[in-house]
Image (cartoon, rainbow, N blue to C red):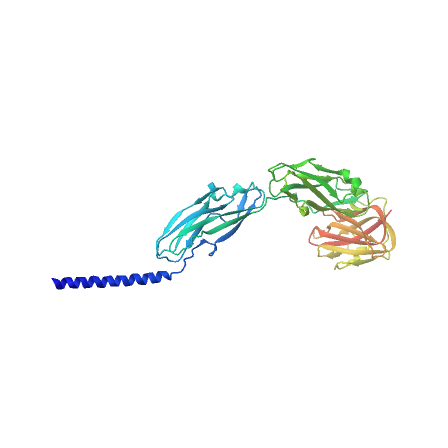
Length: 448
């Protein structure tokens, strides 16, 4: 019995010595344990603790973010020999507190665990609470963590999203309606403009975003002489974009043809409609480059036109000694002045879209009219829809007398000069064939 008791005491003593040795070792290790510096990062941001997003105003005045405000934040530290208690607070600048929610406030990290996550969410992910603050503003939202644990610093650490909201700015500009031409064509003939309708341009005044006050717009026009400004009308007379809206109804700028009658020469008018917007709301800005519309009014002078028959007062000019020169590649060009015309006469043909040639009358003549005969063969007449006539005294300087147009197929075209023209050279250009080619048998030039 005594021997058993001695063995038991020996074992107890040895165990006591062994345990004492382990505790001494542990104390030595913990003394050398490093400072445990925690961190917080934003999920999806590649380990970054700060992220920046931008809030921009849309055309309806609402705010749009280029990334979500609601985020998950991950808290990390190194493995600790003791439990760590982490307290989270919402980090918030300029955002109403009731719109933010934190998923957890106090979290215990048992010894050995290294991370935990919390979520900070914006209610409905809706940032429009800030839309009525028209100034540029910066908002912040995130988490602040305070940790208690073995060799963990007590200073709070933070991670956050920075939201940079732009200042509200509405831009005013002028916008042409669809299908508005870049140029209006008008034809001067017989001391008048053939197109009777006034020139009318349609457009709207627009904002890229609404403003809080009415926008009133006035207009001015450049490119029209002062004495013809009275012929310009703008309908409606008063142009307003009501507060909260972004466009006017269609506006029509109109001018009569009177300014085109001041000269008998071809002209090109560069027209600019300038808009000037005014508003008591300071957020309105005018885009100077887009506050004007530009278009052209092109006046051509046409001194020729189709008539149904040769005028009884005309006299055909003799073709003796005439010469004809082809501009386009055409066979049989001499047949155009051989006095063998009519629908079945000898002729010259062109398989292209245009047939052009010059007649030299050798001496200057005062021209009152012209005629062209086309070939009629195999049941088809090979005429053109358009005839252009130009004249010259020296074959160097040419005066365009205009283009006459007729859709009907005909074996002959008769053209009248509204004002007689003195010339030695006449250039004919027949184009846009009715059939698959152009074939001309004779040309005629008349004087009174």
